[in-house]
Image (cartoon, rainbow, N blue to C red; front, side, top):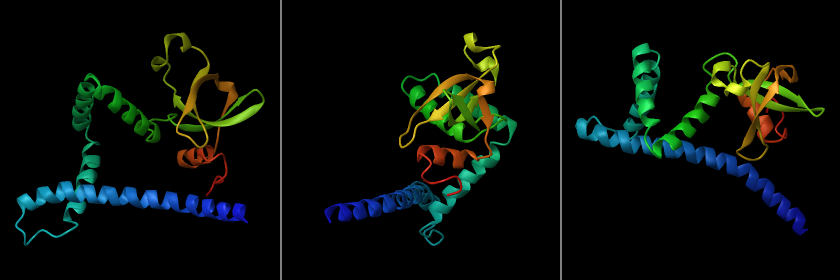
Length: 194
């Protein structure tokens, strides 16, 4: 009886936690943008024009505007210059580079980056993601070989490992990056199209 109660409790817990965390993240983003942008707007606008939620709307508009500006070559170059400065500041460079690399991994900018593949080794297949196709960005000892750099995520944890493997041991999969990551991180429990 206690096993059944415990199992039911765990089922409810694992059902509600992702929903609560997602809602909390959205709430935190909304409150933070309202506090930051709303405070700024209250200084600029008369009280009659300000209403609760205007800061959040302004925050969304600023993010969208930055997205539009990043399409301009000059803005991209200025952003790259700013990033180079951050990459040379002690402590900040380590934190910023790790966050930037994580987001770059999930926002592929060129063909091949983040491509979902099945990697075959020791008569097993695992899901992986091609992370680098440019031979010049690989360590010198791996250049000019018919190898690819593949990231293999581990299930149920943030982590994984990166392998250099012969390209003949890699085959492309017809899965989106999000589907493959969800599938790999949950050990296939969610299924491909969940």
